[in-house]
Length: 79
Image 1 (cartoon, one colour):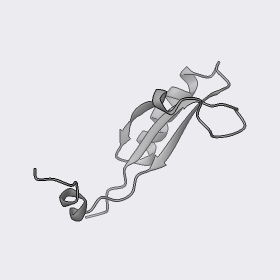
Image 2 (cartoon, rainbow, N blue to C red):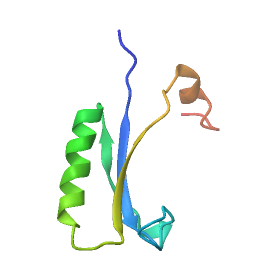
Image 3 (cartoon, rainbow, N blue to C red):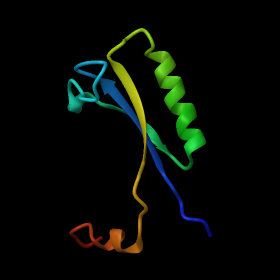
């Protein structure tokens, strides 16, 4: 079975459109987590198009680290 590679799509308003510092990290828009890059790219493209009139608004795709069985038991408490 192939390793699952999850992708996060998120965005927000930047302080300066030539940099990647967010104006308010508490106001980030999390679009979602997607099972593959193509689905993430479709979501990214839709949000980028929706906010095209705001030069300070940017959306990003990032690949999430692989999860392991150890991750489920290291959440700091009993389930």
